Image 1 (cartoon, one colour):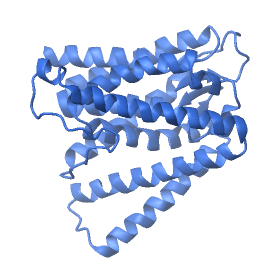
Image 2: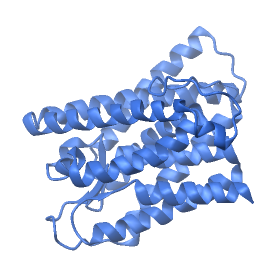
Image 3: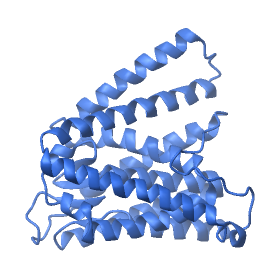
Length: 295
């Protein structure tokens, strides 16, 4: 999940306030999805990537000493790490194939996102879920998934950002509101550490040296800066988690932390070379959310 630019590695980057736009849009879309989810009575299933149940309603000293969150974190980050290695190998050996693989995965994620939140919207407005309406929802979700894939390959950077935000924020909000509380906390810290290692010593840093344009669907580019779709997912996950497990004020604080952290990341990126997109935003956002919830 590195941030990178099209300019040569080691050169200073032209970073402006406009580069914050993708994250501004991401947090706005994440809030919209979160409000739909909390207004709905739909119960979100725990993701398969965090299969181990946590003891309910545990205090911090109990929840964080239980092995379940750490085992879930290892499974989750292990899947992310293996996925990163596979993407790197496919991109290096079959550079033309990664375009279609990335677009396919992005379209599938888009379909699932639009179907899930469309289902929630129908619940919010108390629309009866009958077979005809469900089939219509499937058709609309497929059409929207095709549209966002088309937008992802648009020449207009704004359309690419809108497309990535609609899908990435939807996935992130689902994770933030469906994963267990302590698992999410541990994953936020663990994925931040993994991002640093993977960018500077692992496959993500090597990916940044390849042609990132062919990986649209896994990354989004705007004004010559590439942002990993995973960054959008985890920014949104933190905001949704803060709202669902803490309170409204904590979610606002987490949002502010994500934006401040992204600004810090852009300053690092300006020096040249790739920069991990998660640590500053997630750590600052999480700390602000937890501090706000205590007072």
